[in-house]
Amino acid sequence: MKLIEIGYGNSLNAEEVLAVMEPNSAPMKRKIKVAREYDKFIDATEGRKTLSIIITKKGNVIASAFGTKVIKKRLSLENEWIIRKHK
Image 1 (tube, one colour):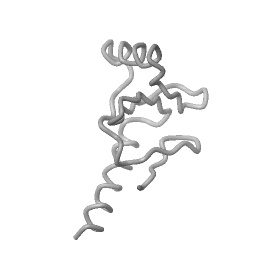
Image 2: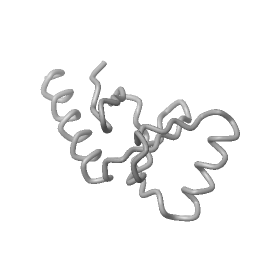
Image 3: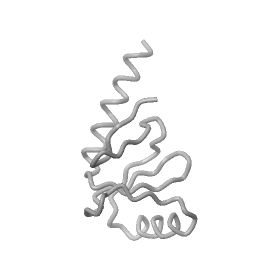
């Protein structure tokens, strides 16, 4: 298991990430609303503005104060590490 930082001391298992999305679209706002209703929403923004939404394989929806580009870059660096490790 390899953790990536998603903002302000919060970390996430990189292998569990299914998607990283922009938070401002109507479908994502609905996804957040439904996730809150089913207790699947995790707010990792520490009170700051939500800049990205991370969806996990288990159906959790995580709000991050880091932008999508930052999260995607950290995930791609993690994937490179996994590929190198398995060669």
